[in-house]
Amino acid sequence: MCLLLPNCFFDSMSKLSYTDSEKRAIFEREFMPHTDSLYNFAYKLTFSEDDAKDLVQDAYLKAFRFIESFEQGTNAKAWLFRILKNSFINDFRKRKKEPAKVDYQDLADTYDDTDAPDTAHTTDLRTTTMQNLIGDEVMTALNALSVDFRTVVILCDLEGFTYEEMAVILDLPLGTVRSRLHRARTLLKDKLFEYAKKRGYPTE
Image (cartoon, rainbow, N blue to C red; front, side, top):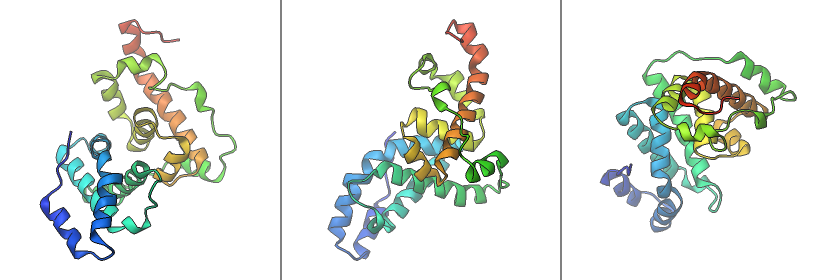
């Protein structure tokens, strides 16, 4: 999906200092190619086209506002995903009046990540037969996960971010990212086991 930003978005650029043309060039070159990925991420978080569009637009507005803090040549996609994730947590959840959720295992991981599970032995949607199941059943199972677990699967297995990039996006210790991804993949595998078995896919 190609998300069109309103004309007022670019009109506001002329009101900003620091060489407007340079800012616009950086924005077009570094950020705009990731519009569809941002929208897909936002939609998987909100399950609403309107909310997803609002999140993406808000992320782009913030990205432009703080464009001077972006280092050209670095991972613009990861930078944008972090902004969108923060917007979702800080703004969307507040508007929806969702109660704050605390994963006590994640809190433990924050202070002790020495025993983080080896995610090499869990299901990776990109490298196993599960990639053939990306459809209604898989998306239903993915959407049934809590937002914290769903997010790490999306970032790693669908968007291809590394653990290090995910740690930056989610603002979490690396051990917490590994642990959360391990649990998310295990939950997803359990939800899909019967479906895969019925369809004749290897389940061992």
